[in-house]
Amino acid sequence: MSIDYRQAQFLLSAAEIEQLPPDTGREVAFAGRSNAGKSSALNCITGQRQLARVSKTPGRTQQINVFPLPENVGVSDRRLIDLPGYGYAKAPASLRAHWQKVLPQYLESRQSLQGLVLIMDVRHPLGPLDQQMLEWCAAADLGVHVLLSKADKLRRGPAGNVLQHVRPAVSKICNKASIQLFSAANGDGIDAARQQLDVWLE
Ligand SMILES: Nc1nc2c(ncn2[C@@H]2O[C@H](COP(=O)(O)OP(=O)(O)OP(=O)(O)O)[C@@H](O)[C@H]2O)c(=O)[nH]1
Ligand SMILES: [Mg+2]
Image (cartoon, rainbow, N blue to C red; front, top):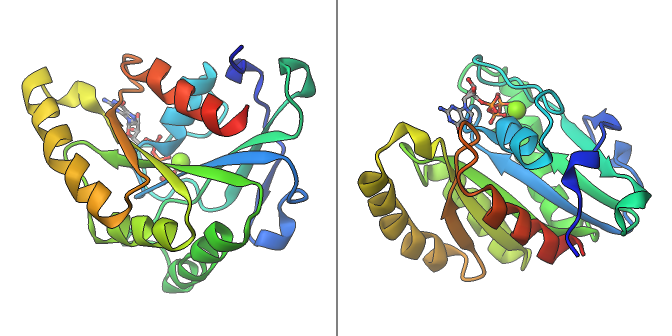
């Protein structure tokens, strides 16, 4: 049986780890560079256009947004988490410093966190902050599933080439990581992404 992600609902936005729901059950977090397509991926996977806010302006998701899955999907106490995007140059320095502190703290301390979906624009993969994120996950012994997003922006051949190049580079930093192409625009890769969530959440 697989989980019905379409039932996900918005619960709250948190600026601090202490504001998150109790650290019980299981959750999966979505992370990535600002504008990489985190919120779009969440909306695509949950089949809900407006669950997470999507914006042309980078830096839209500035808090930790929590989306519980209701009990009636066959599991209980399960959540999806939309993390604030990193690397947005125009974000106030104080906010960047805040998340630079809170993100690794969250990855290390959150017991219910089963894995991280790391989203990278297929046209700009594996920037310095993506590498840092992978290093934090390796240090926390956390599973990572990379979505090379906006795959519809490249032809199939070039997109496949990026996948072949990025896969070993990602594994080198974090040997537990898996990777795939993904497009929120046309739904390519959605089944594989949901399967990974099922593994972590079921
Ligand atoms: N063509 C295409 N555009 C996409 C895709 N995913 C996201 N976008 C576009 O990329 C922009 C950013 O998407 P978001 O989902 O808001 O990105 P985000 O990572 O949540 O950004 P922040 O919350 O600002 O950190 C929007 O204009 C989206 O429409 C995709 O798969 N294909
Ligand atoms: Mg967002």
